[in-house]
Structure formats: structure tokens, C-alpha cells
Amino acid sequence: MREKVKLYGSVFVLIVFIPWLLTVYIRRGSAWMPGASDADGQLEAQVVSVLASEIPADYNLECLKAQAVIARTNISREGDDAESGWEEADMRTAWGEEYEQNRKKIETAVSETAGQVLTYEGELILAAYHTAANERTRNAEEVPGQEAYTYLQSVDSKEDIFADGFLCVKYLEKQDFAAAIGELFPDEKIDADILPDAIEIAERDSANYVTRVKVGDTVVNGEALRTVLGLNSACFYLSELEGKIRIVSKGIGHGLGFSQYGAEQLAQKGYTYKELLEYYYQNVSIESFIVTD
Image (cartoon, rainbow, N blue to C red; front, side, top):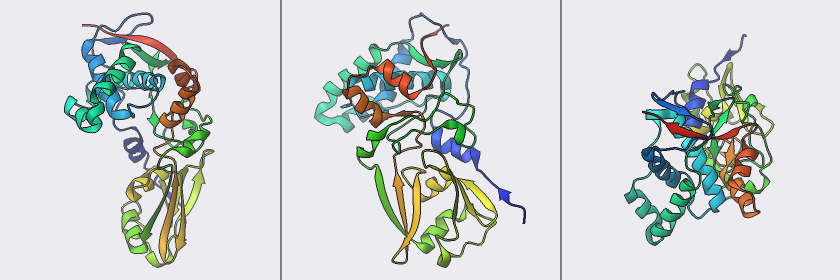
């Protein structure tokens, strides 16, 4: 029988790149200009809010500075579709007594990188980031629908295995597992009694993230299955134990681009924010961005 392939590329995009890959948006009246300073205070204020929401404030300042450039790049790329980040009340709630010192540190990271963004061949990049990789970040060329982002290449990030939550083990009743994945395979009759054998991990990338999962004649993207199962990453393994489905996942997030935990370890070893960015993004430039009237 001819195989029906449903890679769910659009689902993967929504999962992996929300909020910074909904669209490729060209902001009216905006342009990046090499060597120019960023005069838009609103943009920098937004970077502060977004940075606070994206990464632990107790990370090394160089790591925070790298994430600030990432945040500014994604905000500038998205324009009006960019996320707003945390309000002051959110910061006070999250940081408590450490609010003042954390706020100052975040603002320092933003001010010391003011106006800087990442570009590739003259265009703002998709500055993908995640919490921790499975020892290596992923190669976008191996991820269905993301092949064009050649600056997202696989690099070592071995210390990520020490990140809190890197290894996660989850158990599901077979009926609950079948119900969860049913929406991805509407044309297939899923017999809970023969799970997980009914699921074939059809393909993994070089970092061991699942890219294709097959049930019957239907194939879906590994990120889509990750989402419906509520897993930390698409680097997962299925087995049966005592009548339940045992799911082991490694890493936190989609695994593409900048690993926050890995970058933190490198920053502690003396890497500057520019070196961190150049390590996790290949052949990119750090330029200045100015918003014109």
C-alpha cells in the first residue's frame, strides 16, 4: 500500500519557533545598518522584558548578553508579532528579594549589547534557542521544513547533561497514550493493547532527536508527537514496563541553535558573548540595528 506521509511541518514550526517563528515579518520603517547605534528606546526596553522572561537571571553576564542579542534579533525580525516578555510585576513575583539585583543585571546585559543583532548574508537570522540539548545541538538541514537555516548547525554541548530536567522519565497508561496520539493519526486504528510496538520510530537525526514517527501508513513529525505527549524534547525513547508506556526523553527544548545551559558552562570558562554566539550560530555576523522613522 502506498504510504501516506504527513510530516506536520506547520505543526513543528508552531511548536518549535513560537513566539519567534510565526512569520517572516519585515518591519515598516526599520532597517539594520552596520556600524549604526540603536536609537529606539522602546526596542531596548522590550529586550529587557523579553530577556527577563527567557533565561535565568543568575546566569553569567556574558551568557545573558548573548541571549540579549538573540532576543533583539527575534524582536526585530518579528516586528509587531514579537512577544512582549515580562512586566515589572512578573519580575518582582519571579525574583522576590533578588528583584533589584536581577533587574540591574538584565539591564546591564541589554545596555552592553545595545542595538546588536545577528545577521546571515545581510538578513536577520532565525535566532533559535533552547534550554539544553542532547549533548549536541541539532542540524537544521536534518529537520523537516527547516533545511534553509544553514547557520543552525550541530555543535557539541556535552555539559547539557547536567542541566536540571535533562533526563525525564514518564509513564502513561496505554489507553491514555492511544488517546493522546489519536489526533495525529486520525486515519489509523490504534490498538492500545499492542502499544508501543504499533509505533515505529522511522528516523532520527544525528543528535538522536526523532524526526519521523510512523503508525500504519501515516508518518508524522517527531516534534508533533512530542507536543501531544507533553515531552521535554523530541529526543525520546518508548518502551513497555509493567503494562504501561515508559517514555524517556533527553534534553529540554527543540535542540536547535543556542543552548542556554551549554552557553552558561562556556561563559563560566571565559567565553565572551560574541564567542558564544559564534559558537552556536555558524557564519553569522553581529551587526547594529537602527529603527528609522
